Every structure is written in structure tokens, then in C-alpha cells.
Length: 121
Length: 121
DNA sequence: GTTATACTGAACCATATGGTTCAGTATATA
DNA sequence: TATATACTGAACCATATGGTTCAGTATAAC
Image (cartoon, rainbow over all chains, first blue to last red; front, top):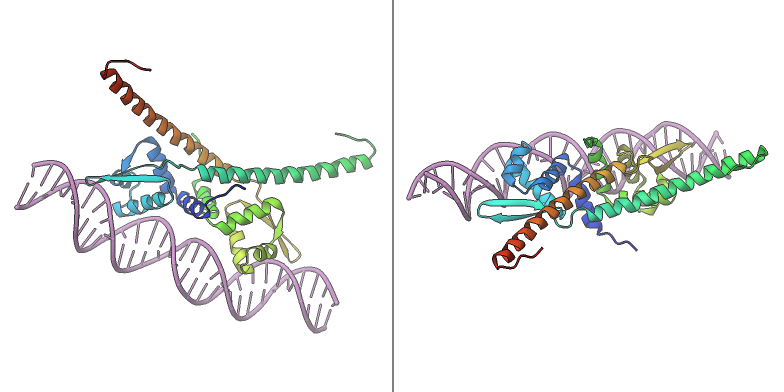
């Protein structure tokens, strides 16, 4: 019954798939920054950085506020919760699946041993 | 000192940014499946599904094995560990950052109150 | 009032993505 | 051996991405 916003997951995983944008998030984790700050830090044009920030903003990972001529970027409040939930849920499925396989293997081993007489745990 | 494989993170977050591929992972969490199985399940062509599976495979999230004419897909062993680690690490930064802001706010409140005479914790 | 700063938007470019169709190849099945 | 199945690869299409340049607008500083 876990309900994910598929569209937002699309947007945020896509946002995370770029090293520059992950870097920006990391940076904003340390301090708020203007578009200019970020553009300089990552050696791309202002316009280029603006685009990255827009992507992060659309994904809800960053919020921005313009005061005077400066747009300040900060981490979004929502912050990776949904993404973490999705991944954790699937890590669960994953390991359940592997445990299951393990059990089958165990069972096979057990039977093999039993056939060879001795019963082991 | 945490070292991520940036290229792989790129690939796997990109792989996760598509709802069909997330569905495939979910499906493979329940049972292994052939390309045909998956293509039918998601109502796209064989060729289309093949591409999705290739993307997941390149990201290391899925492994496949061809026996006879059937290619069986299963979850990769690596399974989201790096992605989970990245996200968890940054959730940490995130909340540290917000705690910090909270502290500043607390401090401001405290001062305000102190100015109004009474000192509160 | 002029100039410098900080951003914004449009347009362009090369490449990638998600999908298709069509034409194979390889392997089972009858 | 003939036929059906399961995949594979090439080619195409529309749209998106990550980047640029260039031409603005708005605000601050002199």
C-alpha cells in the first residue's frame, strides 16, 4: 500500500543522475549559494548552472528565492525521503529474494547430505 | 573519505528514473523473467524491453543469462547498495544543515526573550 | 545617470532516450 | 525438414539533456 509519486520519482532520480547536480546538492548541504557561486564552483556558465538548479527545483530537491538581483539556492525541505523509501523498500525485496534463493540452495544441500545419510542443520 | 563510483551512480540513478524500469526491478524482485515475459507485462515491444534490460544491466542492477533461445533476467547481486549509501549520506548532510538552521533560530529566539528580560533555556 | 552585476530567455548544437518497425539469427518443436 | 519462438541489431522518429552564445532585464554601486 506504499504509494509513490511516480512522476516525482522520475524527476528526482533523473536529477540525481548527473554528477554536477549531485555536487550542487552536496555544496548546498554545506551552505546556501547563489547561482553565480555554483557556476564558478563547477566551471560552467551561469546559464548552464541555472538549468541544473531548475532541474533540482522541479524535482523538489532544492528551493530558491530571489532577493534583489541574487537568487539564493538552498536544499529543499522534502529532501530525498521518497527516494530513500523507494530504495529501502526494494533493497528489502532484493534481499528477501536472495534469502529465498539461499533457502532453496540450503534445502538442496540438506537433501544432498541426507541422501548421503547424515542430517545437518 | 567515502568514495563513490560517479559513473556508476550516474548510470544507476538514470536507470531508476524510468517508471518501466523501476517496475521491472520490482517484478524481478518477485521472480526471474524472460525478456518476453517482461515485454508482455509492460505492454511494449520485445525490442523496447530489451533496451530497458540493457540499461539496467549496464547499471549493474540486473544480470541476464541466455540459455537456448531464452534470456533470463534476474536482480543483480550489487543491488542498490551504493545508491542507498549516497542517499543516506546526503540525508545526513541535509538534516545536519537543518539542525544548524534550527539552532540559529533557537538562538535568535533565546536572545529575543533575554532582551525581553526573562532567560529561558 | 552611467556602469557593473546577476540573472533570464531564446536559440542552437551534439548526443542520448524511449519507443517503434523491419529484417535477421539461433533454437525448439512438430 | 518446415515452422514457430525468442531474441538481436539497424534504422528511424520525436523529444529531452547538457552544454554553449548572445541579447536582454532588473538591481546595485559609483
